[in-house]
Length: 112
Length: 114
Image (cartoon, rainbow over all chains, first blue to last red):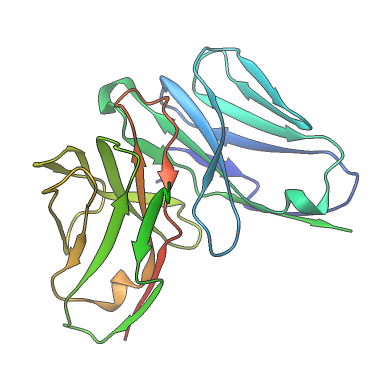
């Protein structure tokens, strides 16, 4: 059983559409990070959220940390083909120091 | 800075063979980790190190050994390769143990065990 569950696992949309990816857990995390990974490369950090209810924006991407720090969402507005990639959420628990637990990932394809 | 480098990029092994995956970073980061990535399972932590001479097990350590003799290098050794170890392996580093630091990942090693 994954500690962090992401949904959906696959998402294929048309350019210009909006989408939301979810990252859920029954555990509390002291911080949560979102990474994006392109084929043949390692993940690259997009954002870190640490406060319950926190919202961060990165251009067309909006990240939210749940009030109880058990879940997070990534919303993309007006998706573009350049947004295509694997999106991974990763959480750090207070009892695990800096060790990250990763979700399964969401493979996003944005078609032109 | 080269960041995190990994070699080789690709490797094919036969069952029972041993090999070492190399990882090096030039950012003077204390914390380094090894992950494996399998389809539908995200990244799983194999071993990690919080500094030279200090290593610890992660979520899936069986069949792997690590050592950290210098801050820069963190090799991962497969003692006797098994088909279940077919995966993509990523090394990562970050500067401090807070959980909010950016982890910098290498480009990965794609390993196939026949």
